[in-house]
Length: 201
Image (cartoon, rainbow, N blue to C red):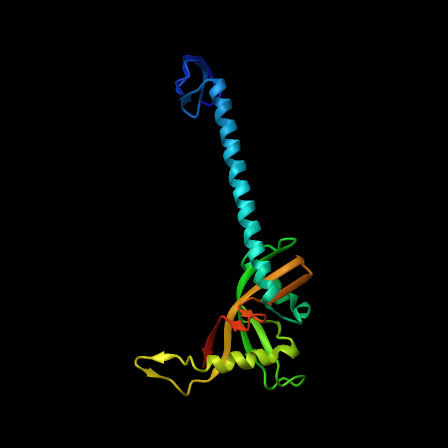
């Protein structure tokens, strides 16, 4: 039993000292046991430092992408959908602040009464915002390029397939749960490039 006083036995660490107690089935002297605990604490601290550094690099990379990304508008009206997306990626919780990656789908809304050029943004099939009105022309350029990537069926290209949207990478970021933003990092508005996957009907 751990901690039970038995007799003096040689320390199994080979230090030459005697062990009074048995720990986890091993005879270890108090000095070696202290060394083990110290080494374990150092391993934990090293792992925590590595995790923090990895998280810092990840966040830095995300922020660099956000600097060049297309920011979505109208998220404040759709917090329920964004909170649901965050919970799905955060073990059912909403951290006080953070950022995470998600796939976003852009779909034009030609029947939108407020703006026939509107482009809606969906995450997990839920509307989370819109492409800014002064940037909807970017979607037109993406759409024109995407139409050349019609899906293949066997050896035949379905030329009559209708493009209904594009999928790209997005970042959901929040400074507190009631302030959530979405950036389309798959669309580089500074470099004039886009990393998208066309969606056909």
